[in-house]
Image (cartoon, rainbow over all chains, first blue to last red; front, top):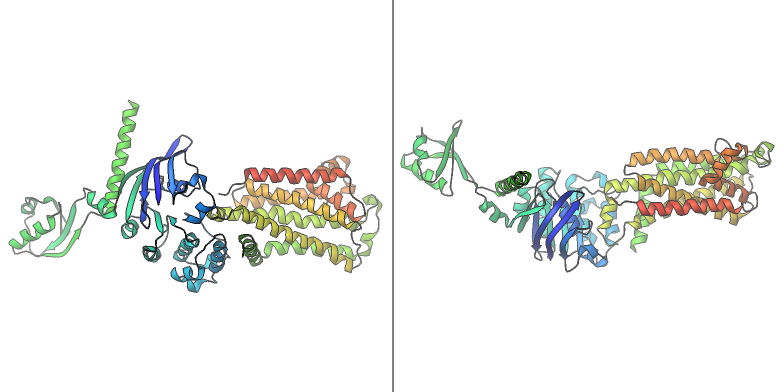
Length: 310
Length: 245
């Protein structure tokens, strides 16, 4: 549905997007993750035909955004980062206005109800909460019944409750057939919603996988912590084959190690008649994978720079 | 409903919800025109004004006051604000052109200014003021003047990204334009060199064209030429430099 090959975009001396490639299947929710300034927005603005690319090829629903015409705009809905409406425009008016731009728009009232804005039809934009504004923004991106929708930094600046509100809405959209391209720097968002993600840093794709696949690939350690029911020989714990490190933090004992560390420690404790109270086990998650990936990318480019200056 | 009519309808509603600028623009000159027309003395030819009457000189100035305020203050204010909000960029993502919004705003501002002009011409006649003697010349002069003013407003909206800066610049330009229209020093009493400059400004040329039409004749072709050049140059410039984001 979306095919990006070797996309390049240069601003003056700076290469902002440097050979980005990925493809998105129909009906998929695809995430583009990356730290601020990684080139995410520039990438999706090229895909959306809002910027001219300097190299590579892009196909969206069989069309080239660089030669965008009416058919392209009908097929693609875009929610832009930090895009607002006039203060005194009501929710209903905005949806009616935007639906008049399309050949076969969705029923705006149905969309309104679906996005939980049914009771806000006559509310001015300025009076909406942050979450409601973002949901309206999603509604405007979907009003034309697009095959593909791009949503850029949808939940940035929202409080946790509003963020969850928007997430549940997007989860509902799954299975309606629309292909979603989601730009985010929230790992939790990608973990909950995306079928696959591409991590972009320094204008390059540094990884593409499912969120679980990326998390599993991270060489993060399992970390467990607990309060032992009786004094514990920490040195003996350290000797266990799966354990990499043991430390204490107040009453708690913190053990890190490979995948089996939790069961190994519990068995060892059990053998000594000790139980692990208030046990916590943390899996390496997408956050860890993300930090690790972007740090590696940074080190690589630092090495390249050092090598180049010699 | 078509996208164009929907856009005009929406923009009219929004304008009605922020009536401040439009009311202020309309009420002041309209009331001034009525008061001026109601005083019998203003209709007599005056030697100080080169044989013209006070009403004959000032009615065009007031008509220009309204269109000038709407075009160089209200219009750039709305457009720069829309750009700041990202409304223009959002429109680019739809099959509709963001140009549609500009067309809707221009049509709306022009309509309001035409209503103001009609009020300023018609209402004073109830109090004894004369009608413009050459109506076609008056209307042609008015349309050309409006074109030049709206062109200037579009250039301001193109030059400035920040709504506050655009508003500040619009205010300064408004006073300069009103000065050359003769709001403080009526054009017939301007010194020769100042009048030459005034003749080349859109408001100066427009005042002459409107005053001549009110007195019954077409102004000399040069004044229309000045208005045409201002209208064409500002429009082309605005089209070239206008940015959607």
